[in-house]
Image 1: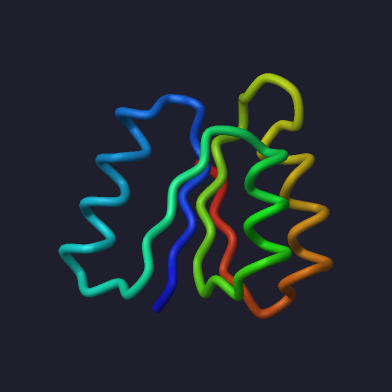
Image 2: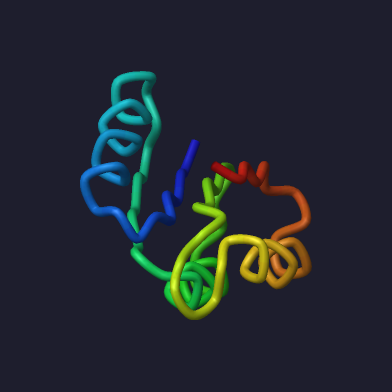
Length: 79
């Protein structure tokens, strides 16, 4: 299971990343912007992507619609 965590709060992203690793996730990546999330989703095939709703620039909701088109099988969670 490969996970992408998207949150502009780096501490919150790290907590989620640690939790994902504790439950056996394979690759766990974190990014701090919606733009970076879209870029990662283009390059890598994640199974689970968590998205912060409120981020400067491209919000989690904006990124969600783009990523859904790129990775329709991925589980996307808005946090």
